[in-house]
Amino acid sequence: MAKYKNGINGAFSGKIGAVVGASYMGISYIRSLPETTKPATEKQLHQRLKFSVIIAWLQPVLALINIGFQIFTGDKTAMNRAVSYHMKEALIDNGKEVAIDFKKAIFSRGELLVSWILEVLSLASAMLNVKWDNGPESLFNKADDKATFIFYNPQKEKFVSFKGVARRRDKETVLRLPKRFAGDTVHAWMLYINAKGDMVSTSVYLGEIVVV
Image 1 (cartoon, rainbow, N blue to C red):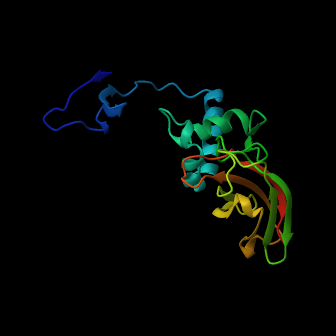
Image 2 (image 1 turned 180 degrees about the vertical axis):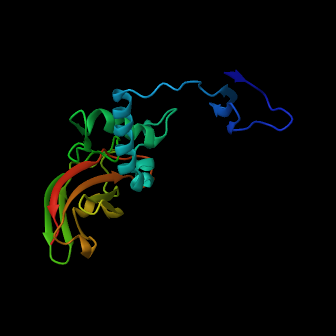
């Protein structure tokens, strides 16, 4: 690998012939492509499978991931942090097949306090009623923190999210899911984002809900 300053055409990124140009921490560099034809091992292939399953699942909610993992990025992207968490904590892996462990999946990690979920009721016409309670108000538990809800329908492989639809002080909200979800079981999560948008709670799994 070699570092370089701007040449006559400036820095470049991407592949040209047998070299690759890129940039890291503001430093441009070039490196040669690896010369190997060695096939991937079963372990490597399985690792790739885990990555692909997680990334494919999280990609539809990338905008929420970028908010939910914003304070833990450092030199990594929010998606990198989310994938790393799910690799370690939220996969069901039997050595051959992998699946997301919905109970352990999260969409945010942060310092805001969560609420106590009192009730999640499935109402007619694909509507849901969520009720919660809060602890004493503080820097990490403000009345105007905005609640976001995320639902995943594994039968249809679809996410539905409701960003900032209620405030912490409301202690209740009614949400309308797509009518085509009727009869399906969905998984649900709740998280808070503060009024400035620079602090979040760790998301909470609300459980499995049968949509009616």
